[in-house]
Length: 329
Image 1 (cartoon, rainbow, N blue to C red):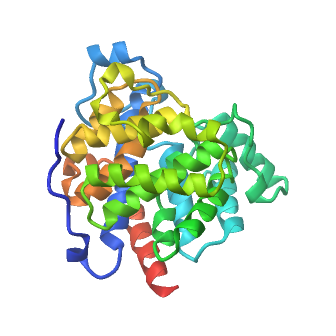
Image 2 (image 1 turned 90 degrees about the vertical axis):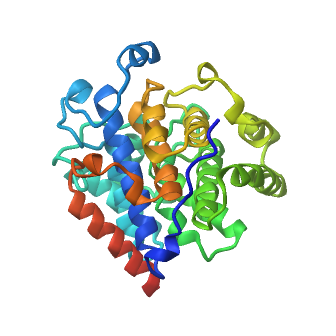
């Protein structure tokens, strides 16, 4: 198991959060784009044909550097947050993506999860975005986890209880079941501590106490908490690859992302490990890449990958815009 490289001092890049935001957004987008060409490919296939760099076409017939709905909705959320926290604005940004191809890599939506699509249609028809996400246990895909990372920057000054409540609201725009909400909360708390400069294994141990304690205080159904046992009670990084699942279930994606982060020592190692798990390759790598981008910093993402990313300048401008928005209000 790798202890990892020294992480960046985000403060060295200025008093605002522009570098950290850029690291997070590109972390998501690059991981996503690495996984797009091989989405749905089995682990056996990936073992025989491992991804080692940025490729294109493949499953979705998209050029190299094309990101999917994971990044699109991440960018929609980030842009909505530039003006503060407004759940209606977040919901409308998702509607603009789905119906008007806003924040797409190449001008067209080509990949979307069922629960996400249904929720956005409900918003379009007038449902309150806080109530638009399905609350059924069967609707625990990874569609809210994959795009939640920008919210962390808006939650920085807020206390734990408020962070959980706002995370619940933003997850529930597309995924309203408590399992998806807890997954997003855990992920954002991990990202928050990375930004604070903590070491990744220390974060992992700390979250076992913080998250477990908060869920207990909220009187969350113990049957829903137990599904997080591999993260909250055990050392997930000691598991073998064949014990890590990489499909579209939110718990599997969260576990895989944390496992990839903890068992590698660089951004590129982490996201390539995620992609080569197979199945939901783009989302697993996007979720992994968000944390790895924050942990190691934008400067460690291979330049040859970044240069191929669709709408690179637009993403850079979005990062700056969000940083300015955070400083302004």
